[in-house]
Image (cartoon, rainbow, N blue to C red):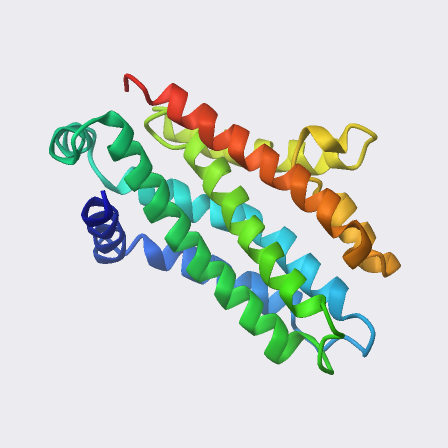
Length: 222
């Protein structure tokens, strides 16, 4: 399974699809962190960057999973020892790619987005938040990949609409039904990020787990 995940990552890089996500990431980070935020706004900078990276990370995960042809995916399932291992290898490779882009976003925010050192406790929270962002992107990208939605047009529309729905739903009292992107941003702006972090992180991880489980269920025969 590890070998298959490494194979998919190598194929993603060699196909040059990785540069699409890389260029989108660099463009987004250049806009979001175009100027340094004043002291005291470190939490806002970190959270905004993590939230806005989600659709780009979803695009990266979707592109990686779509790199492998359908027949090759079937052969990979046989060679890996079953459909479950093939699906897990794809998700592992997609998360690894998303984690690299998320790490780039975190480093950019720390070096060019803030004016001073983050207060105590904020840096570990920010690191975990970018991990959650990578997991969210992996789940959303997997659910809109070709193995689930064969039509490229429908797949892209589902990815974008899924992210917009996530934003809209998280702005309501039903934010616990999705990844609470807006509550993350509100908590950072109000200075309550560390206090609300366990609750928001728990909701986010639960949604990611449900999304990844749903992908595995949809892929049980495809």
